[in-house]
Length: 219
Image (cartoon, rainbow, N blue to C red; front, side, top):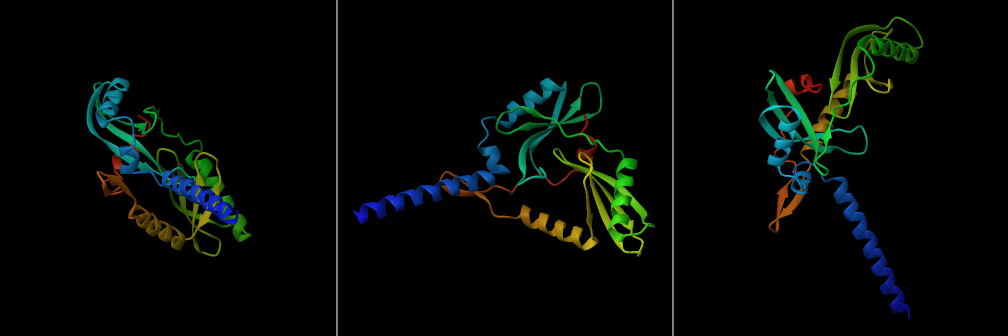
């Protein structure tokens, strides 16, 4: 009887571990892994893009995008030369094949500026913050304004204003440097997918950020 109970518990535990591992694998399924599991080929996605925006596909592949949530999401990405002139950048979901439209910033430069200064001065407990520079940074799912500000004590602070919600986070240059290092390390994480019985590195061929891409997000 005891052996039967022990066997049942072992089976339940094994099932729980298997489910947990499957969920963990699904959570990290991005990059090449997401493309390999997609029911769509790159040619089909390029055809969708040319149908949506008349033109010729110049480049097609995938991009791993931050979501501002628990983990990144992989999208197909197609860059087109439009028949009407200029270029366009289109994104598609790797699972559904549906087009994904980049978020549009809600806050203007001046609105974000005011929130950034207010947050810095509230934190310092006095007025006198000086904004040195500010810029909008955009991805497909997230957008934020970064302001370099000298607080009333002449300490450099980075005020990061969410361009959608208006939420403000105060960071030091050291905080930003750590985030950059962490991002680089995250991109080098060894995540594999079995192909023909052999492990294939999932994050090996993601394209580096292209400065032109951000300018094309609204096209």
